Amino acid sequence: MGSPVSYTSLSQDMQVSVNTVKRYIDILESLHIIFIVRPFHNNIARAILKEPKIYFYDSGYVDAGEGIRFENTAAVCLLKHLQYLQDSKGAENGLHYLRTKEGKEIDFVISDKGRIITAIEAKLSDENTSKNMVYFRRMLPDIDFVQLVKNARRDTEENGIKTVNAAGWLAELKA
Image (cartoon, rainbow, N blue to C red; front, side, top):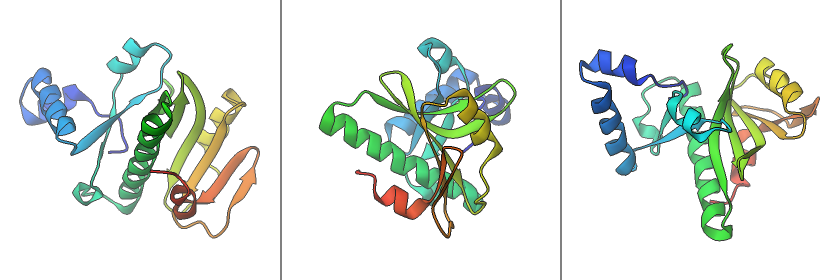
């Protein structure tokens, strides 16, 4: 959760083949225990080859620190919102993450018709603007940037990056 998953690494840890790991993940996904967030890429085939992130529909399964649980909760809220838009309005959107070869990453990006429209970073308490958000803001100046902070005392905007209280922002999403 929250980090790209290596099928090869998992297969070595579990001492099974990579294909077996992929089948296990497919089963968990079809049972709606987990969902996969793939990296955004204009080339769908390349995105599928890159390492996905895995999140649980039920954050009770997340046995990790509060920050990881918070990111998982944000992922579930965003996914439900996008599914609502797909079902009710026929939206052609997707939930992805963005990562450079150098390791700079944004937790979530929302795409519409294959184009990024919003970048979202989930943070537990640090209200300082993420360096990765600043980096990607320079690269993608025409999209919305939102830094969700679980314990934010107030909403701010600096250099086109909104820092908002996560509870209020996520509550406004339709699901």
